Image (cartoon, rainbow, N blue to C red):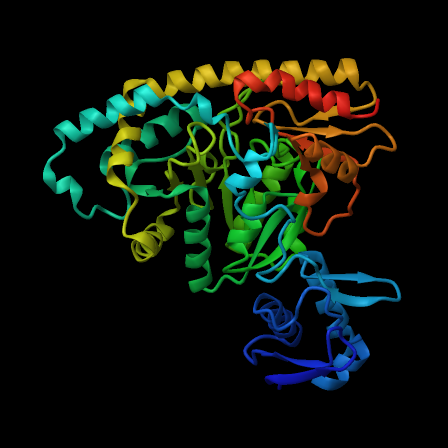
Length: 474
């Protein structure tokens, strides 16, 4: 039987040193080794760059077959915890502890952002477009009319006014099967995903599949509670066919507008995900990323509307209003409502009641819908301007993923490296994303950048795009 084992690796730099891999006897041999190595990496017992023993040496140390070691190493390479090279063995990835994550993780400091004159990095909308007067008017009225009791603790599930307004909005705009009772208000997408993953972990789920390339937040948040396997994304969206042969019991999908590639999940791939969830009792976690900003093609309803018992839906106002308004919502299958509410209570008791009532007021009055219509028009105009400038000034480049959302993928002319372009842009005060930084286990191509045309303020957008196209060799 496997047991906790202190493995000495004498040739690791800096070394020699030992690390403890705790092999859970309740798991199978390979699963126990994978979990033990993940924990050692997350805890910092195995540092970035540390070389692992060969399959032959570790198999002898643990009393298992070399095939078990090789398979475990391969799985951890696919998750991004390890990197391997022919003749160089397996090493801990240079992605720091805490699990494998895309490289562009973590909050960007105000100092970093202020050093940029034109910030086209994905992550935020145009913050200068926030409807300050509408928000202020609604807040003033709520402060005037709310009883003193509203200053006390509120229901962790969310105030009824907002849950009702969100339910109406989602039924109309996203075709969800929803009522007030299966909505939980949360502090944005990150908390929503964290609550779901913690509840799944406590119920016995061990592994979640994530899109590759994909959002750093998916990896950072889900990986804190669950083991992660990658799900490759191509022109048809996430390859959900691979769910059948994975160890995943849950999957996070962005079917409306995948980040960063900007593709929709093909109907056949959607059907495959539903079939997998029904057959295996799996859960689809739907991140409705940029679902409110559709410019081309017909509307695409949320997956939750097709099977509300197999889909947990997450939405927020981070792109439609601002990420500083820490409000989002979960639309949950019945069996997840109580445990998620309990997890929410233990996390922060409840989201801020006044902000909840302000958002409810804006949804009910039509102010939110009016703001959204204006932003769609403005962002579409920006997108069209960007596409035109790239086509005119950089004919060797190709713009992709622009049917919806606030960003585009720009495939660079032959011979132009994305890493070089990103560094050169930063020296000129221009912030852009590198597509490779969103990859988990996929091949590093170094041939495309990500441009968030929705982020810069209107007064600097046109000049920023001009700076970008001037920088790219044609």
